[in-house]
Every structure is written in structure tokens, then in C-alpha cells.
Image: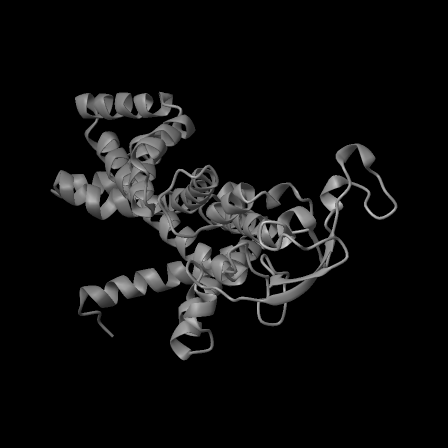
Length: 360
């Protein structure tokens, strides 16, 4: 049966190629593990709004920024020993006092001057440990930590894909132009990439964020430009140069194809796989950059994983060991696992697009 439309021709070419690449990707153990991790965080990012829309969660309690759940508790007032008196029979280190179910008399005195050690004090427990109502506990302001992890997933995906798409789009276009046109155009673009590569990106981001108080989309724009104008252009250009000398490009040139037609129809599609690979790795860098700047308090953002760790540090809980583990560990592991997931997917795609790495 004859193929009558361009879409049918594209589908006939694209579908077998996709199936072949997907089959190769499934042979990569690292790729499958990474995709599973990304899928898990993707579910977390999507499910939070559904909880609010369905009424399963109340925004007054579970909103990651303004939510609050007052948990009333009765604590025993104790007098903590002086630093030179440790260890004692009850407390081994200064951070062990007050213990679980206890509160220091110095914390109570401003609110209840007549209280003394041995009395009981009614208060609100914040931060609260994990429970059936709050699966990962609450922070020092009574906000649900699990909801904050979900919110952080949304920020990570949005920032990662925005910055990676921008950087790969710019680098793919400029790298292809440099390879195809050559000459002064190539020389100018390569010197530009060298100049961007010379810039120390992390100190540059720290200075810019401190001066302008970046929002998420500001950071995505800066990361996209730095990545798209830097070393990624050189990598894409080297790939485009290999495609440029292929026989099918010479055939297109001999048959009268214009430079624009050859570049868009023959070179760009063959550079796209390596661009996709760089895009996946770019998401990892964006997540780490956001976490670093948020941890330092340099981003104008309501909630993210880096912001969670920053708040735990400013409240003094980050140095309490594992006593308040839910304030730091979930956010830190989220950054590590999602970044690692994208890295593993990138390794899996490398096996697909690089025949030399495939298992024989």
C-alpha cells in the first residue's frame, strides 16, 4: 500500500527507531533504575495538587508554605547541666538535654516564670516527629515535611527541564551552525564558548544570586545561557562535523539542497540524540545549583529541598545529629536520588546512542 502523506512516512521511520532505542535502553540496568527513581519523584510532584483538589488534604494544614497543624503535648520541665558537668547519669552530651518528652526550664521561664524543674508544661510540639497524620513529621513552624518534599519535586523538575531545554536548544543550534558554516562564524562561536568556560560558574552564580535574589525562572535562564553558550557548543559541533561528511549530506548537496534545508533536515536530526543526552545530564547540574543557592539563602523561593535544609540550619536542628532527622535527611536524600536518577538515565542513553558502549 502506497504511503500518501508526509506524516505516514515520518511514522514509518520514527516508530521502528523508537522501538529499537527503547529495547536497547531496557538492556541498561542503570538506565532502568534511574527511570524508576525519576518516575517516583514525578508521581510525588503530580500527586500533591490532586490531594488538595480532592479534599484529601486540607490546605490550612498541609500547605508546604503556610500550612500549620498545632500538636498539643505536655512536657516535663528539666534543668540541663552545665557543659562542664557532662556526661551525667541521664545525659551523655549537651545536645541530649532536654530529652524526649522534656523541655528546658530556660525555655519555659519567659512564658511561665513560676515554673520549676519537675513541673509539667503544656505547649505545642514543633517540630513533630513522623506520625500517621504527618508521614515525615512537621518542621519548626508546624508545616508538613512530606508536602514540602512534594513541592520540592515540582521545583526540581520545573527548574531542571527549563534550564536543560534552553541550554541544549541554544547549544544545538550554535554548534550546528559552527560546524556547517565554519570560517569566521565558527571562530567567533568557539571563542565565545572558551570565554564562558573560563568563568567560574558557582562563584558567578553566588554573586548574581546575592545581588538580584533570583527566582526559579531567573536561575533557569542563567543556567540555560551559561550551559548553552559554553562547552556544550563545542561538543555539539564535534558531533555535527562527523555528520557533515556523511554520504547522505553530500547527496543532498549535489541534488540542490540549500544550506538551511541540509542543516535542518539532515544535520540537526542526527545531532538530536547527543543533545538529548546532554539535556539529561543538564538537569542534574540544575538541581544541584538550586539546592546550593537555596541552602545559602540566596534564592527568592517559597519552598524547595535546599530551602528545607537552610531552614533546618537556621533553626539549629541540622547540628542535633539524628534527633530531628526528618528535617534534613528527606530533603538531602531527595536531592541525591533525583540527581542520581537523571545521571543513571543519561548513562543508559549513552549506551543507546554510543554503539561502542553496548553489551556484546
